[in-house]
Image 1 (cartoon, rainbow, N blue to C red):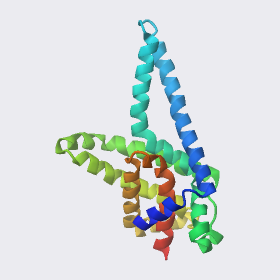
Image 2 (image 1 turned 90 degrees about the vertical axis):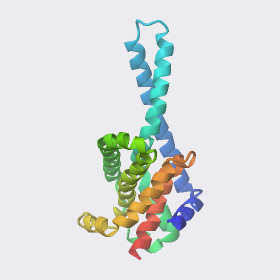
Image 3 (image 1 turned 135 degrees about the vertical axis):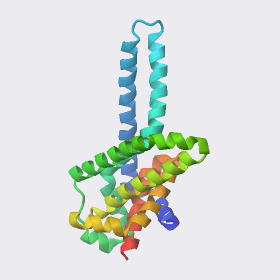
Image 4 (image 1 turned 180 degrees about the horizontal axis):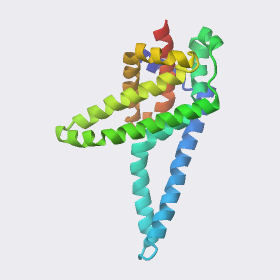
Amino acid sequence: MFRAFLLSMRQLGDPPILRVLALSLAITFAIFAVLGGFLWWSIDAALANWRWHGALAGIAATLTIVLGTWLLFRAVAMLVVGLFADTIVAAVERRHYPDALASAHPVSFARGMRMGLASGARFIAINLLCAPVYLVLLVTGVGTAAAFFVVNGWLLGRDLGEMVAARHLPAAAMRDWRAATSGRRFVLGLAATGLFVVPLLNILAPVLGAAMATHVFHRTRR
């Protein structure tokens, strides 16, 4: 996994990957900016009869966006990157796995959208279901963080792995592939989850995760 990370870091300067990184970050932050503007407008309207309602709305919207960005950045970023993941995977295959690139079937924009939406929905739904467990484990000091890593490592490993597998496997073979690669994908997911919690690296995490998943997929097939 460490080698996959190093190879992915070295390829961040490739023009196709840089374009995806810039575009995905722009769209991600635009989504949060729009949400922030809508929150400010909503709160300002709700507090219209209060003195200093504009300032209060600004403070409330800022705090909500900061908290929402921390909680939902992963879901939104993976949704956006999912739309362009095929470009990242193709760039990695072009440099390291040319034979696989020749036989790949590019993922359509519509399928990428469906996969991205499914990824975001799973992240939100399963973490909401696990929220009571996270709260109970707060008393242990480290239990909440450990549970979060396990749950999201599993989720992220599936999402990243499928971004690559979708180019090379028919839909009927995906279930068997998931069963055969569950351990490696879980380790991949743990590594990517770790990137999401490291400042600065978290911005690169979706792109790095897709590149790392490409290496893991092809090395596992070999």
